[in-house]
Image (tube, rainbow, N blue to C red):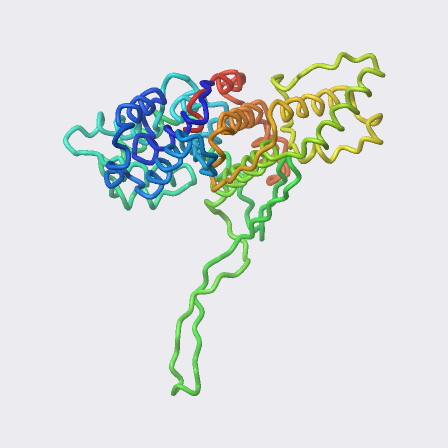
Amino acid sequence: MEMFTGVEYLKLDIANSFGLDKALFAERLAWVNRHLHELEDLWEQADEPMLYISGVMALRDAQAGMPIGHLVAFDACSSGLQLMAVMGGCLVTARNTGLVDPMVRSDIYTQCTQEMQQRVTLTPVDRKEVKQALMTRFYGSVANPKAIFGEDTPELAAFYAATQAVAPGPSDLMQDMLNAWQDGALEHRWTLPDGFVVHVKVMQQKLAKFEVDELNHATFSHIVYVNEGEKKGISLPANIVHSVDALVVREMNRRCNYDRAKVEKLQHAVSQELTARCVPVQDVSTQPFEQFLGTNVVLATRMDKLAGYSSEGLQRIYSRCCQLLRYEPFPIVCIHDSFKSHANDMNWVRLNYIEILAELADSTILQDILREITGTNGTLVKSTPDLSQYIRQSNYALS
């Protein structure tokens, strides 16, 4: 991953707010450097004027040697599709969402628009409409793409063909998640690797009629929602992906803003236990493991019960401690798939995000979720089992 100084992150933040967030990092830095003498004069041209001028003010303070509290924000490139690519091992989708090809700043909405345009050459295709349709397409929505492109139109057919071209894996994953729907169930439940349990009630919309005697027996209709099962539903893909998205946010907080003294103490205790077993103490963090290891699970380790852990489990705990201790803890602000930190800490925000997604790519998280929902032992076969190796080389997972 390409690393930057704090001042360079301020410049990248300025470029992002101006509207250059789809450009390469080098191009963003070059633009700011070219306009360094006139940045204040360009604020009205920025996509986000207030964020832009805030970044410029922070840069000027840094240039004057003053400490700043400005937070730099980097966003995931289509986080929902990133996670579907990761959980299904889809190399194509990973490439189109910035997880592969470190020298390319991918934008799957632009790529889908271009794919559509090749199929409907007589009609201009609007990226904004494509983005709106694509954001819901892999969550099971049929109505939204129809509302945008019409029913049984060449544009709708081109849209579906384009989505299959730019994100082939999520199409299969979406169907797997739709098929997991339990006929008549009042709720769907699954457990995430960090111990969080998801309960999603099945709510049915009902139209209730009321008669009011005091108003001359006038009647009113009111929409109510009741917890009632149904034969089929389309909410599972969105709910599953969003739950994993929330797992990523929690894990980002844990890995960035950890308790250093607690981690150092645990690392030392685990190292002593492994040494007593004559087991080499080594970092296994990049080895593929089927079970994703939550940092909260690591920090819940009882140091007086280490003898009961397997050597492999202790190696993983030790390795997570090593990962955390590479850098001093720092606060982070997470808003869905946007991560904010001080400019001096942003390298570690990006590194942690890449590592979390790589570990998810090695894991069987989606298979485990589907098994718990359905009560079966189905197997999810990933198209690219070693996707984590590509992810660890990425540069634009957050940009």
